[in-house]
Length: 317
Ligand SMILES: [Ca+2]
Picture 1: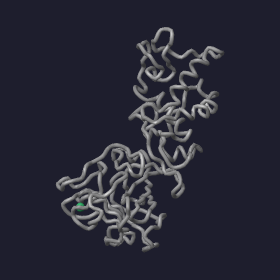
Picture 2: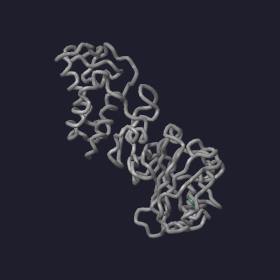
Picture 3: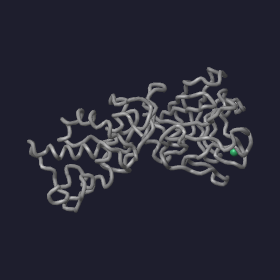
Picture 4: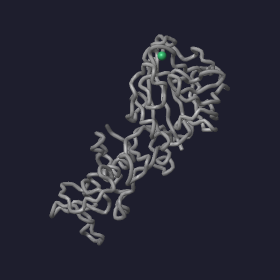
């Protein structure tokens, strides 16, 4: 899969810093610079041992930089090939590599703010920062809706869309968010989705890293942007939210937005509430149904007959 050049770029940089980030591997045998990735180290081609990168300039470091770049130009770990974009990457980063490659951006908003967005798609991010925590990963960024900079953390479909109000219907999968565990649940996902149709969810414990504002997109209801106002979706705190409707699919209730986030503790999933459920992420197949009512009245006002019924939650700082 081809990726925009800046994806190759951020993917590239993350390859260098992925793996045993932050651990000293000085003196360890190696075959590749990436095995000596603690920063300031590389695989000496003469000895095949991890050593400190020489700090002297001159012609001698040309090979080192080339080696780093050519490895970096591929997103080997992710299976995506940015090879065709090496030229732009090389040209843009020749000057800066002596200081070490920059880490992947924290999230989609950072990519947007850095001017590196090339539109909606996959980007390598590292939400808990470089040199610590979890490894970088590829995330889908919405760079166009409501200002862009949104990181996709959850994409889902339905177990029984055609019988929407049946108890058998639920969103699927569900994130690892708190719900009443006594009910039979659809599968729980902790793998970041790579597109709006890659039905999966980033580990819910990591959602706060990506910000408290959220964008809800669905092919069967209206799109919302919400900010925390006491309630917090990412922290599972029931309370007030401040929302605006940004996608008008239904033609219904254009002025109605939810005003409360309700966490999933004690129920079958969290919900956004207006006069009643607006979005209800019911994840159980024995009862209840996953309301997607653009009028926020817990009615079956979702669009019917949609070819790819689905929904998504994206986050932004
Ligand atoms: Ca159900």
